[in-house]
Length: 158
Image 1 (cartoon, rainbow, N blue to C red):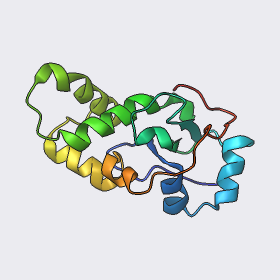
Image 2 (cartoon, one colour):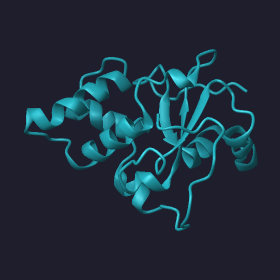
Image 3 (cartoon, rainbow, N blue to C red):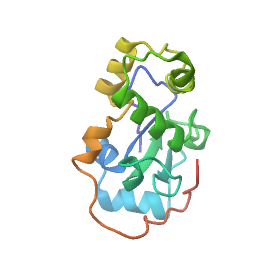
């Protein structure tokens, strides 16, 4: 299966919700579940927001990092927790003022995008391309189920 990251901003791969990956790449949800639990391609890495203590609403979702063909997804440039925190921060603070507060998120953005500066225009492009996921988009579709997140064979705090 040839699944390549979809963004010019992130040539090394992107984090996305499992639902976004199913929709974007046309993967059957049963096949995705198989990937998550049994036979994951090296270009995909799964992590649940709850297991890494991601902020709400990100904590309610299963995420997948998709890397370029022949590249191990476990080599993702930022952890799912850092990606979720960055998304949450930029969802609410595109026009930042306090350098001490924003600096860690700027650094994460540059790592995630292979060196692109965290300017308002680049951040807006990242949201438009699906590199970042706006928290309000997740609040509208957050799963209502309670209990433990699904187990994944390669699920960790990454």
